[in-house]
Image 1 (cartoon, one colour):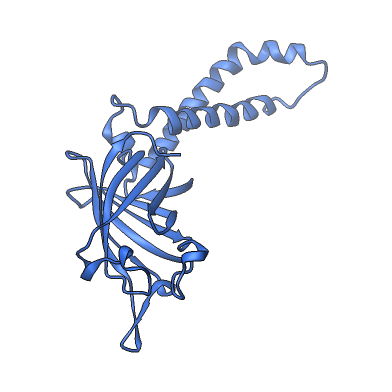
Image 2 (cartoon, helix red, strand yellow; image 1 turned 45 degrees about the vertical axis):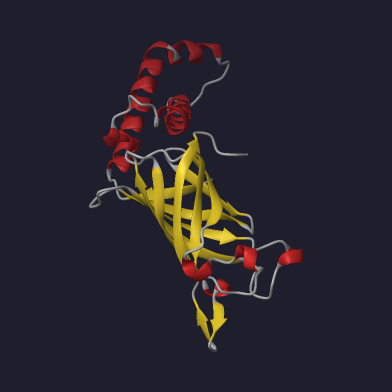
Length: 228
């Protein structure tokens, strides 16, 4: 998984709050536990060494538990969570304007013929990874950001790399490529919908010029766990 960004400024504030909680825990340990620990050590240690190490360990544990276990609990306030949890297996389709040399079975007819596709998303409070796949080829996200302010519904944008079709089935313009997707999340119906476009490596030749490939995407969550 990779780190994602968000326009919600409370995320940085929460890190400070977790730091304060870790400081309070270490302070209590320093009063009731560390004096006894110093007596068990047969040599003298710098007075701030153990509290300093303890703070790093305690903060790391608190952050890890919140990041992986607590952030998406139903009772967690929305202003703390800041972004929706998109973890799960999503079923849907794309419609593409791609007009390269691939079998007709895979072509989107004028951008109106849907092509079945899936999204498998793994997410924590700080990291995410999006696996997209059609019958033709898979892709994986390399960066992502959430927009929660100034919009009716949360939007997620991500960069991706596509491996291209299987080597035995590839045409001249079907090698690896990268691109961008931007999806809007409607929580009431648990749906992601939006668009994508690809980089120059995927552009198809038409009338002597390159045409960027783009299309629409729409998915609904099929289950809460991503497909392995």
